[in-house]
Image (cartoon, rainbow, N blue to C red; front, side, top):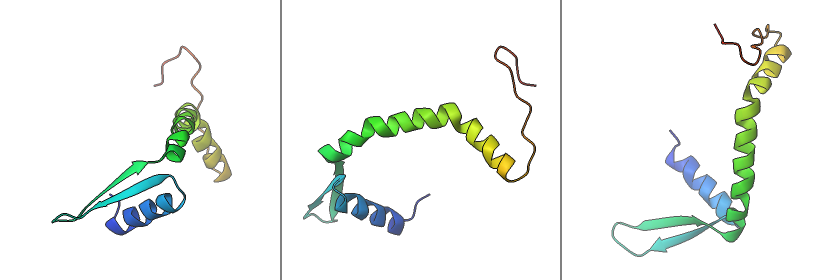
Length: 84
């Protein structure tokens, strides 16, 4: 779980960079809404593409980390074969 402090700092940084907008309402209790700006929306396809890349290559990254740490890589599973 993210702390309130870290969330607030992150949202302020995103607002500072023009990626989100902040709207405060004069209500009791106080309420604030955040939304993506046009600039923020322009990042959505890129973030999605990065997520797809990470899904497709996450195992390769973990294998590289294991090699760098001197750990043996798990045996490769060939296409069409079942693991285990």
